[in-house]
Amino acid sequence: MAQLYFCYASRCFTKIAAGSLIGLLICSVPADAGTSDVRDITVIRIPLQVNELSRNAAGAPRTRPIWWGLFGAGNGAASGFGTVGLYGQARWAEDWSYLATGQSDLKHKDWFDRLKYMRLSTNGAVWISFSGETRLRYIFENQPAFGKAGVKDASRILLRNQYGADLHLGTHVRIYVELLNAEAGGTNSYGYQLGTQRERLDMQQGFFEVKGNLLGAHVGAMGGRQLFLDAPVTMQSARDLTNVQQTWDGFRGYAIWKRFRLDIFDFWQTDKLPVGIFSNGTNYSARMYGAYSSTALPEFHFLGQKSQFFMDLFYLGYLYGGAAASIPTSQVAGLQKGTTRRDGIGGRLWGKAGPLNINLGGVYQGGRFHLSGASTSRPVRAYAINATVSYTLGALPGAPTFGVQADIFSGGNFNSTKGPIGTFGTPYVPLPYYNDITTSLINQNLIDVGPVGQYAASKKIRLQLHIPFFWRADTNDAVYGVGRVYAPRNNLHGGYIGTIPQGQVAWSITPHFIWTHDIAGTFLSKGMRCAGAKSGAYYMQTLSFIF
Image (cartoon, rainbow, N blue to C red; front, side, top):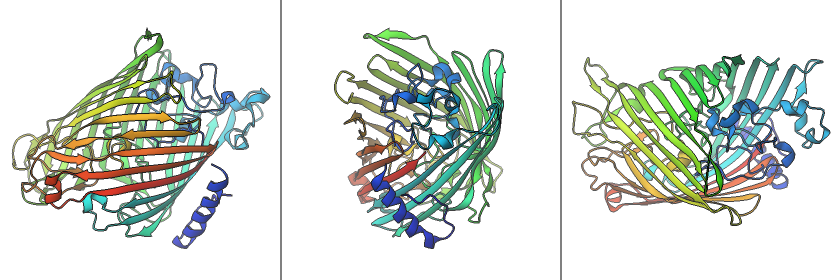
């Protein structure tokens, strides 16, 4: 069976990896397990296999909190707490209290149900739930970061153990703690010193929550270290592609009425660079704050199908410095260091109209850039426009879905040292599956358009495809990747960057294991190749155990 224990030294890595591989060969997660590694190209996810006894009367997984109401529709993303199938992106978003019922058909259908609801008081008001994930991942890149990562033919092996406990002290108070251990090895590897792949035993999440009912709403406040998923995936994500997820230290307050919800938050990024045991701190140079609201518009029928739209309005503020805040100059590889404030005001209309899945959004970023060592500053005027429209052929086997995704993320001008900065800022890692799983590109100075598709080949196998074509939004601005600004400036000719076709096959074998394969190819333009960038291939295989 898979060996599920923490490893404190690199010499343990091979033993754990081998044990995990053996276990994955004999067991393996329901397709609706809620893993955030699977790209959701549709607005309302195609229903996937979950044991019917695990669904409530409305057809949603019983682990999805009932008080989400209309915001628990589809995959639950409208709630602001991430998607929840049987399992959730944020494990604390799951509600296993249904196991307290006396109905024998709902209890212990799965051996791990014994760990999901453990009564600690005679009346059941105090109870605890345990969750866990062991994930083994292999990544091959023959030209990582367009050949600019300093290595080629990179093979990386990543293993993480992430286990949590959710203690409920009655109906109004709970404490959640999640521990993480992450190991990384391989050949020609890179990026292991950034705090995103290696982590000795540390607290990944730990917060205190109080909740209840007030003014007709379900309200709550969460203070401490936590995942935050109530933001556009084009701007911020859980950073689940790496071993170490992106977490935040601070406060969040929420309120959910029948048709309206509101979220307010103020966070500092968790500092993952320290390598000691329980050594993570708070990065006070990276702050995110704001408010997010969503309105469930009236339901309607379209082409004979029940339909629902949501209208979101939000303010997302960033304060950050370091490499992410630097802006390019006209000199090759030149950068101006500084700090920046970004004030993002945006909206999103999304939902389902019969067989159509529609997602339309836009953000305007204001703010200021303060140059290091100088008293001068420059205003920020940037924007993003996003659209995805797809059509589901629900009457056909596998419910194939086809559509188009298009985005504009504004660019600036590296020849200008005065005036507004026009480059859209995304310092906190947008969802890689949205645009580029290879992370060679990021949503800055970028235009993309391309087809998307999804198909359930069987109850346990799902296929997804995205073929984006990329251009620079402004040819007077640089090409940006995750954590990097590529060196070419005026010697990069033309706006076209290239195309990165990418696909995924996800195979759910048993209720606790999933096996995914991601394949991508980078085909760069002549201008990029002449500037020294290189086309390449990308392959990622992931074996996950989850309960």
